[in-house]
Length: 143
Image (cartoon, rainbow, N blue to C red):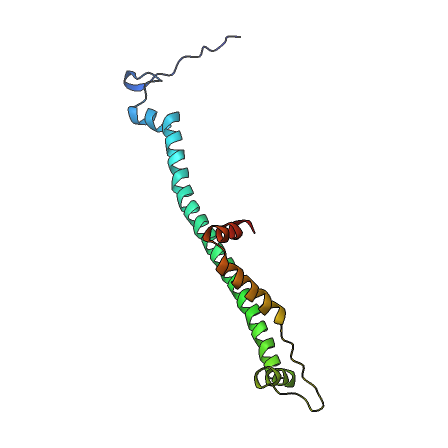
């Protein structure tokens, strides 16, 4: 059996197989594809990063507004409780006793004066008049 000989392919116009054009080598080169890929990633990543930061900012604002709403609801509840108390008979009686010095029939009022504090104040005033300035400063810092 006769083996067929394999002949090399004949190129037109005498071009060798590795002599491709400049643009073909540029477009199929590893550096060019890397640059194109990185550019594509950058084009995609920047808008995504902006969107993500805007979303975080909006979520933070929503949390702040929710906190304010909760505070206002608590204040509203406290004010409603205060209004309910002020409209009650108990509040009316307490205000009449405090501001108008009123009392219930059959009830006695006792007034307690605190004479001890007045005596101590007079004693301190008399001591301060007799002491020198140096002694006053000593007592101010060390007593």
